[in-house]
Length: 281
Ligand code: PDD
Image 1 (cartoon, protein in one colour):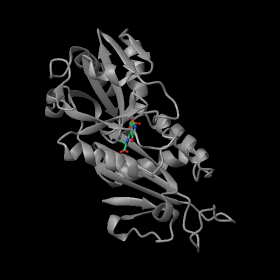
Image 2 (image 1 turned 120 degrees about the horizontal axis):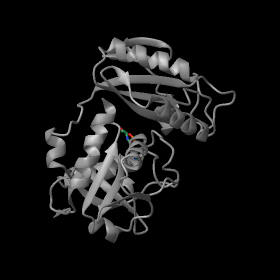
Image 3 (image 1 turned 45 degrees about the vertical axis):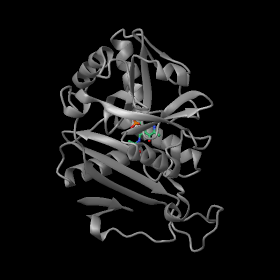
């Protein structure tokens, strides 16, 4: 596939970065994952706004304005044949000539990398969603700024792998007795027809898909509250959903080996999924 690196498009095999890159040495960088459906970037402005916040949290200067990003992203999508793709975008603080925790002074130019991967688009009757996913709960061992979309993902990787090893698709994370989010997704529960999701804070990544689900629920008069969810409430929920840009909204039908509700995708999820798919068309 074709990738973008520091101003140029090239074959993936041609792309080279320095081992002195601070992304490699320190995970000193940020990223975004932006879906494109039929070659069209989805919720692009929202993703760019979050990227701007992540960059400024790291005191990194945004290398491009929004029009500049759009031009580059659209060209990369085109060069990879359009269709349904997820676009990966990463910016690191760049390669300095010595390894030093402190920022290079004077600053070096950032490393900007973008690539694409095929995206299987969930539809209302695609098998993944009809059967739903299994999840396990795990202790949230991450840091205190999970709102930054940092490339430093070691805890997320270990948590996700622990879920996979136990036959589940996602780890749902618990911090001090309350749900934060998934290892790479946001979490919703439904109880007695009311939908709830943890409030945006430094403890979670403000998902673009999460925002869209909230928006759709409001537009459809589905009762939704942003509020703290205890571990007990999670275990007792009628429905549990996880959301992300690459998987949309997936019903969790088994939690820690026990069925969630009926053990099948719930009625509220079905309503939401219908509106979600209609919105994307
Ligand atoms: N992850 N929370 C975490 C910790 C995430 O890593 C993600 C997404 C989300 C959902 O955010 P969004 O709806 O904007 O995709 C929530 C991406 C997809 C990834 O790391 O691949």
